[in-house]
Length: 601
Image 1 (cartoon, rainbow, N blue to C red):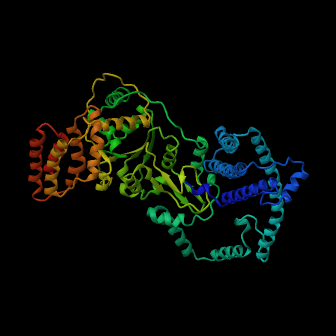
Image 2: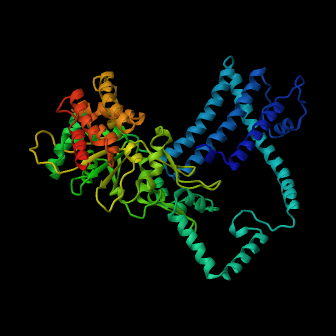
Image 3: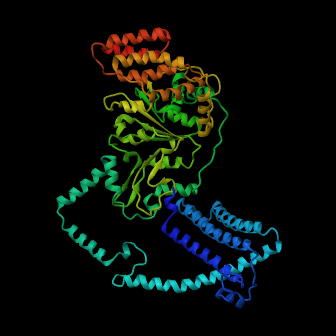
């Protein structure tokens, strides 16, 4: 995020500081001029110093010159540091009363002055007295340089004013460029435009409004071009992004580093969460369902809980967040959702403000609290097309985590956005997980293969029977760093990982499915297996049960709707192959799904 720090005003200030530094060195050399130096002993600056009663000091070899140059360099460094801290304050909306801000300012001053004096001392270690004289010389040089700089400014500034105003002698004066001080010619054009627009036909006006509405709710990319391109001169960010700016103020520009977390392993986490659901919420889930749900958080950032209404799909992520003391945001999906603007908002070209959604605000706030787990629940997510309104998320979450960014609008040049809105892009923090619930009925859309491929899908076909709770059932505190640490540790354990033999057995099944149905088993699924299986096994589960889940939800689900003649015998052959490779009792989910497909044929 370099551009907001390097503005034209900043470059001008640094250039002026550089000129001042050059003048400082020149004045210092003039004040120490002797008969043996290039600069004449009767120069103007030395005369000023004598007239002011300053002590005349002769430099001791090259060391004195080096000390002058080092001081000049650190004058520029000091200005640059102060400008950087000031821009950081503006960009992050930090108030002047903030203690950390003042420490930063003081630190820049102390560091620059300390290094300048320290290095000067280093070059005069042979004579402590020469160091004292060097400091006297630097102080006198600063005084004479400042007087000289003011004198030069008093001469140069009027010349510049004369030159600029002479060039624009036939134009009105405007100190600041804004709507109030536009050139008269532009103002007249605007007035003409207003007069002409007042005589427009109703049909043309309706066409304009209709085009705007279509741009607002239509395709996301077209809407971004139509609206963002017209974001000409925006007001302060507090008016354009009121919600995001308020979050900046609430956190005072600084993120929360870490949050406390309980010491617990994955198996304890799964068992305790299942007991918590049963004891506190009277919700009963199969233990493997809990394992898949938690393991899926490491495999994909999107989990889909699919099944019949009333089977506990929405309750699972809600109470998981409550159980680990995480942040959860519920968003009921609407039928009208068509693109990313439905969840991320859009720029209103009429009011010159950004319509912020709750989803956007919570996603933005998650960047300020990176150690807290944030869960976003898209309730009834298939009531609209997931691959439309969630398309940007499906794409960017495939990239490395440092590229999880989505552009929400094109920012005009010079506009300082909210602190975490870099160049108009909203960042998806690593501590965010998305869970969608999907019903299976006539009122919803079928979920596309691209969505299934990029998500962890858990089926909820029936309610589980109650069981007696034994063991711990209380809630815990779980930070994102702790959860990620548990995932990373399990993934590195060789006994939890997929072995070459495990893959050879699985490929016997998937290769046959590819030969018969041309349903591919790609690298994306392999990566998900490598991420999910170790967590599932570390949670107390079996590899075969994790592979059963993946085979059913990633491969066999793509056979839905196939009614060719060869399908039924091929499905029966898959059952026989499962018996041969894994045994008759393994892969119950895949067997159940295959039998349901056979019944439809």
